[in-house]
Length: 575
Image (cartoon, rainbow, N blue to C red; front, side, top):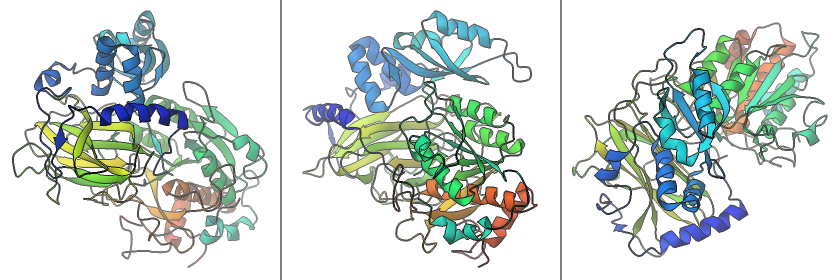
């Protein structure tokens, strides 16, 4: 889904907080086309604060810790709410990236010592995966925990986003013509896993929109399979529509650590999982070249013989990339239109977020990147509804001193009125002009300097993923409703997506209703279901089945495979 509606209770809280921000009289205004660096007295933007940040603590987590110590628990909770930080009382969910000297067959002898230390400071270990330890710890213990010798870096968990009755895609792809054929195999044709964020309402659909029984497993710390989200349920409905005899497994997660454990579990299931349907994406989780922790999970699944079918993303209109440009030498990035604020419009009561990364990840060693020594910062602004004045709302000024990731992010603001928002990119310290990649979230149209090319989310850039773009089910078009579908190429020049599939389809009233399920989220399970259907109806193996699909597509756009439609639109019938 492209936007996220506000919970009414949370809205009341945000209205109050944002109202205070709007009427702080000392808030400096900026020129529309030239934001000046914040004055020395501006909180969080001076060289003093930048220099004293702990290089082993992620910026936002360190900010929470400082607010808790200096302003108290209530102020920390307000900050956490505006940044989407998971709190339980005065405890915060963190991920320790551990430094283990001894590693034998993925077993870390020091892991027990780190777990014991976390428990000793009043924390609770929730999940571990390789060198990652996810825990709830007292906010007051963040700094001490970062100094423990086995902790290389302490951060907040990475979190994914979802890419937002019988699907119309069944007939438009020709799957209905295959469903009536006698099966080649006598048993269930395929086992498909929907790896998603939540499956609310799925039990009421068993035996109708879903198989009579499904296998389930939650890797969330709270164990909730439903997680108050219908997204995964809608994806499962489409797979069942496409391949009615396929066995379904529903698995959910909420963080990168839980994701790793979920994939490990999926690869060890009996009977074997054949296809993973993955309508989820991640910002700032890799270099766009098919490496990083989430892409490594895709590789792990592929190496076990599972076909990973993943969404390209819905960010073609919300994406910009370009080499850092500063002709006036004021350290602010000048976008192609000359502005130093990249503006985007957000309707009232929608989520506002911005994600920045740049091409200084270093080397991926299978567990982590070597890190960035070029330091850029990200600032968020909002425009007055009655004038052209910009006001600073937030900033992300983490350290990149050689080992940290080249990322900055600002999330979980809500627009209390329909207004323009904007972001600025500031060069703190850099030895070269890096290539910037910016995603925004919450706008109802394209950002001013929109660059659709390269707008894939992680892990759509994985060489081991079948990446799916979206077209309208009725006519295979992108205009006017599907121009959002993310495009390639990857950052190392590979053509993505691999193919396109129907979107803007119907689901049960329990999920999105009539023509209410759009995005590459809806397109992806059509492809996953098609693979499952052909596994049941043909003697081909999974690799051969994908070649059949790619050979039968309806070519769209530029002749041959391209980075807008891939090979073309999914068709199981001859064109």
